[in-house]
Image (tube, rainbow, N blue to C red; front, side, top):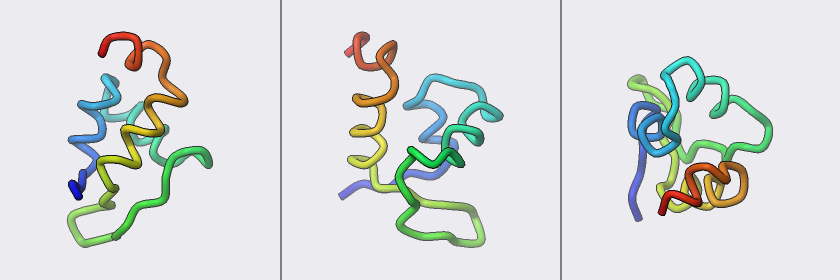
Length: 62
């Protein structure tokens, strides 16, 4: 099981850091599996699933 920080999530989402912060704070985005001093951590598969559901532009590029 892979885990991601905000920067990696930003790259997967294909958005700016500011937009990634907005997206990861939205009610539809998966909850982080951990909140550490370095930031929030998400499961890779949770972020991938969210992208397939909510980001048609990223889904179509696969």
